[in-house]
Image (cartoon, rainbow, N blue to C red):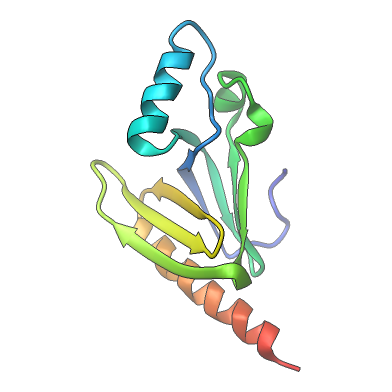
Length: 132
């Protein structure tokens, strides 16, 4: 995945990736503990908001230090989003983007503003789909 040509907003972010597995001796243990306690590993990269989707792509460092770099990307079609919630985090706060089938959690700086932009984009995408 590469950067979209047209986007509404972009953030350096971390995404909670359930399938992420760190490399190395401690990777298996770290991944198991993180999956048990948090539901996956927080992976660093970029979150892109377009008129059609919210996508996440890991940075080069995370692609290098994970066993399954192809499983580190995530995307959600905006017309499928059922809820966008913001919650307080330790250093950066978290945005949960939910659909009927999945939840994508991302954390970034200025997350309230990003959550608001996602909500507006979801409304616009659904309105555009509803037009004849």
